Amino acid sequence: MDAMDGAAPVTTAVRWPGRAAGLALACHPGPVVAVTALACALAAGVGLSPGRFALVGAAVLAGQLSVGWCNDAYDAGRDARAGRRGKPVADGAVPAQAVWGAAAVAGLLCVPLSLACGLLAGTVHLAAVAAAWLYNLRLKATALSWLPYAAGFAALPSLVALAAPGAPWPRWWTVAAGALLGVAAHLGDTLPDIEADRAAGIRGLPHRLGVRGTRLLLPVPLLGATAVLVLGPPGPVSAGALAVLGLAGAVALVGPALGRWWRKAALAGAVAVAAADLALLLVSGAALT
Image 1: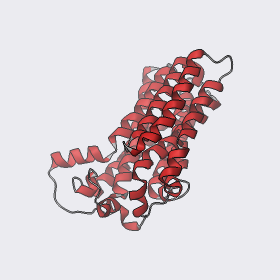
Image 2: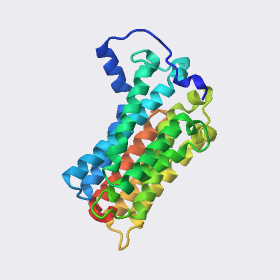
Image 3: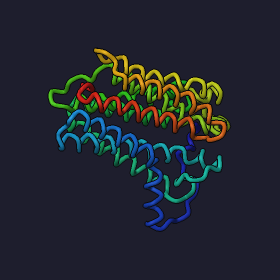
Image 4: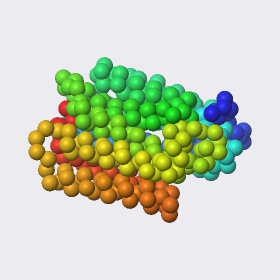
């Protein structure tokens, strides 16, 4: 990425209602809502008190908002040059400076909210948010592009577990499954845009693998995450868990294959497997800790 990626591509004045809408869309609302909902579901699953539940949700929301706004502001120049539509900063719906300011405010709010969940819990979460910023500013264009995703998703069960009374360490299989799902999310999210990103000079792991290589690799972390959740906990494996593993395998294989006709099929499959994995965690309840 060049140094101009964060520059505002246009200077047209925008009225406040349009600017507010642009700012809301620039945060990448889909991922923000999905990740925050996942954290809240995990928090509810382990029975956090209402106060702790609210803190975890607010900390994750603030962190995700800061990451999303940082991403859109930094990529604005490249998005404008590539002619990508639906990007509020690149489209001129909101100035890049306003989005950078929102990212900074959300990032600053994330610090006390995270630490209020507990020193260890907050440190883990802030490290994940820092890794996501590093992805936006540097690692997105390198072979280590997968690493911030793995760290961020692994941090969610860690944050929730460490926010519980006594700050118990999370079970290893929840952290491992989170990391694998993070890698899958990165591959699935990037897959539809690999060629366009390559033309813009992005050389992350999926771009180095190419469309075919990424499509073939994607089922591996998806299946791996489900297998870890099914086989990791001690005790016998239930029939329901085995059924989820079989379903995850089918979806993981079919999703990338359908990508030739539906560009978001691989990502949709990854989301479906992640939902099944979340169901496994919620059914096991306190197994997170």
